[in-house]
Image 1 (cartoon, rainbow, N blue to C red):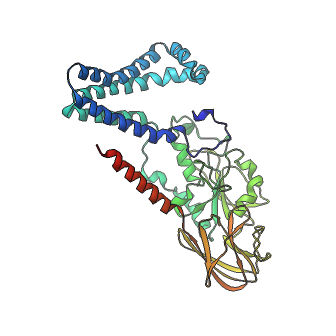
Image 2: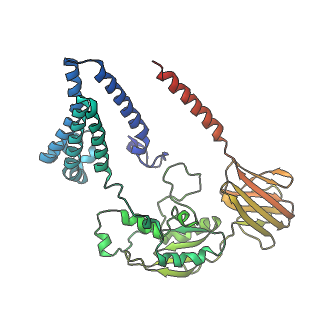
Length: 409
């Protein structure tokens, strides 16, 4: 049903199946409890009817799979009235190639599980095993296992990244494979029938969500959940190397210094620091450095109390940045009066204090943090203390009370 929504509407799930998971799980558990109570309630003719109902869903699914195998065109035309996408050429391919095997297999396993449940006793354990087998069959292609080395950087990529990582606290950005259209693959990869290589190559090219595996910080991943703060991510449209100059300013203001790209970037604003050839891709992966990166924290002159500060570091101020833990940052400053700008995301649950106590936390630019300094030697501590835990505990307690009440006979 989410397909009916306008494409511009963001929902906080990556796909409809994620949205419906809890509902499906709850319905399955309720159906199982009802089935268990029903099978214990009586014997004879009623028990036989219940046994038939246990087998019927699997039989219907297997029958649909058989129909897809014997007459896919007819089945597509019948269902096409409700699902118009099936009437397109790709729809027929799905009906012919995917449905017969998938539905016949799951239907047969469901029939077996129904028979085991109907028999009861120790036979019911077989039903659980058949359900687990069905999950394995359905998901084996979607979740292929990978060795631990899959998540390690190749030695030549690590040799390219490590020297840059030691040059201060800066963020990384990458276009990766996913955002480089027309990238020429080697023939053996192009013929692969799995997208595992895509994930592997995006890992090797440090796509924004991957640098954390190497103790690095990335910036501007694509919003995949709908929950990302405004301005914290890029839209996938236009996120390509040829559009680099259009979002170069945002990258700079996000403390990005290092950029990985399979396509050349403009020499006027970047410097190529090295490249490496991945065996799976014909084009080399280049490591580029912005010519004028902004430090993570800097001083800038501005009217006292003003948050309307352009992101431009001023060499007159000396500032230091220390992350004490994921929720605490300490900034030391020796500057004239002005504003200390920290290129970390602003959020109302962050607070700031100096030696005298709490100080106002400013929103600087599109989404950064800042504090006013009166000049001289200063130490500012930023802490993140979210407000939601109390409400979460209250809601969890109410839910627990509801479970206890509903569980009473």
